[in-house]
Image (cartoon, rainbow, N blue to C red; front, side, top):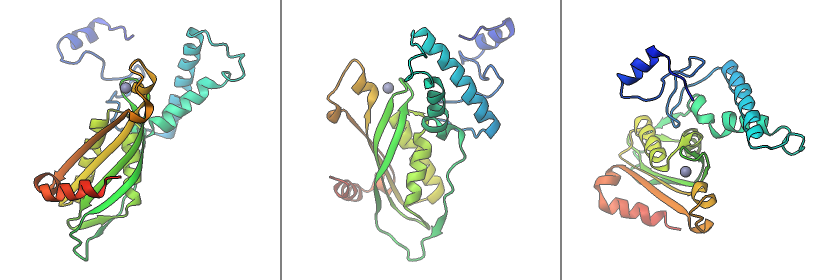
Length: 231
Ligand SMILES: [Zn+2]
């Protein structure tokens, strides 16, 4: 819990925001699915601080670290969050080369089976599934493997699936300026599977789709796309 001093309290009372804008170390705080690159030094600092906090959490949960399975758990958890599950918050965008669409390709290009490995912002439980991207190029095309890197960069943050799809679509619209774009995500949310609601794992699937450009305006095209991505 952050203890506000009078000055901070004034600022908080006079602003719409309830929580501080800077971390206790003075770093800017930003949304769970945002991105601000950090240095290697900051990364090491973060790992050590998160590890220390998880040592406290194990203590509160009364888990003995004499248990050989738990001895190094705080370190492992720190690495997992900072360098894996939240990696997309702290890393530069993936290098993506785009190429001129020399043959004036004017057909749907679809990439299926792009892995989504994300974390829900609400519960910090995994969101796992598949992203499908379809586009009709404008002046540019892109290597399909780049889609995997872009989806991964946005996924490895605290997310909600709706915003994840929008972020990917915005990024691709900016980068490629396609005539049509669709970003479909089919994913399982472990906060639903593991918690109260306890849905049957196979059935707990959430599907979101973001349509842009012609994909939104042209019903025939949209139907063609949806038919092509049916299992
Ligand atoms: Zn959740």
